[in-house]
Image (cartoon, rainbow over all chains, first blue to last red; front, top):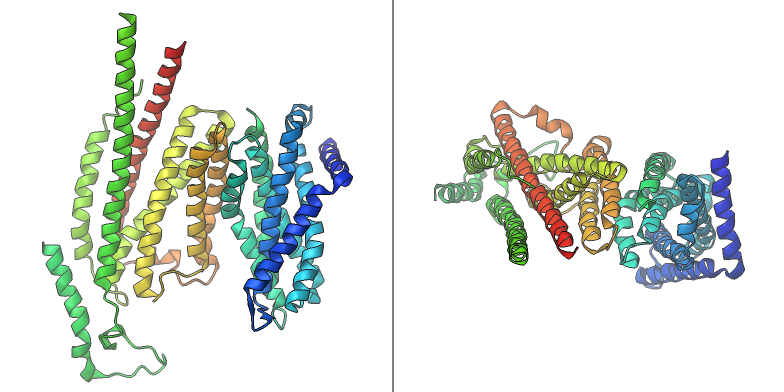
Length: 226
Length: 93
Length: 221
């Protein structure tokens, strides 16, 4: 229980800092919105947006704004040298990782609350036919992406070329998660809704999440020690 | 040399095969639109030999290049070590 | 001090001879019924990916050892294996593409096997990039990449069995006729020997570099 208490403490700390200025939230939201806008313009033909692109654009926006959020969150830690302080605290390292992960996931969830209706509106896409499946897809996909992202962003804090390295390292590993998310979402947008396919991808996402979170929890400690 | 002759012969046979296959003209019943490779007109066929040769040639080039980079780096390190040993030998004299 | 292994030269000679013989063996192998000549790319394509499987396993194991035990030799083996993975992967992708151009009519397809294989290649290119440009501590970062890359590798292998893809299934190799089977076995053995040789040479390079750094530091004292 102490493990989860510490994770929640880290989460509360991040919330407290963020609630003062909303800096990361607002910049991530705005970036996600402009991302969707740019991609939508790219796929417009004769004044109409291509419906098939909706799923892909949604997940690209999540992936890109996730990268930004990760970079900004750990940049803040690096600037205040608070990461070192966190690691010096007598707390199990995986609990710290979990706390940071929950913070990133919460941030991305808020982003998705804005982006999903926006994409649905711009593309006339029937996102809300199966809301539970959509929530499952988004939740599991975001968790898998954030799990690997938090690990890599944390370990890149000390590296020299951290800003450019994060996408280079993160994207190849999380592309399976993004593919699963996109294909699952496309299945949900098909008419009629292709439930078995969506459920298949949700199952695969669950599998990815288990593997990635386990690996990340396991390797966080040795990676963060000098 | 023999390999080149061999491949030239095979490519010629592949390209000339449809000329020999035309008279038999079997029409496939279940597979609509599917034409066996031998019965395709030469214009639509893709010669396999250039692809095959390109694949093996690429392997050769890639391996040679990679082995060359390893050999390069090894000789540079060995040169540096000799230089260092020379300097140390000169310093302690 | 790193001494040269006495097996190196004999194995090198053996591998060179085997490589020299392989075109003859391949030319003498019977034609496959549907794909005929272009199928002969298989005799290098398949061994490449087998060698890559070995190097990925070595890299992942070495990365784990380095991350959790801190053994310097493990780090050197991991770098060597990652470099080999990128080289073998590059040839595997290109040879597959050339074969696919004839067999499937397209240079590339976004099916499960090809996509995952391409991702594996990208992950290990990322490994090499992070080692080169990551700055201090990049060896641990790269070890993490190696571990995640190793977690992806089984998916690459099994993807053709789980999804309907344009790529042949894993069961095809076991059902080859004997005259083809001997050739593919020979070529696979050749490639594995080559991988072992290059791995040994590359690890020796890293060990020499480490020794050089040690001597430079000793000189400064």
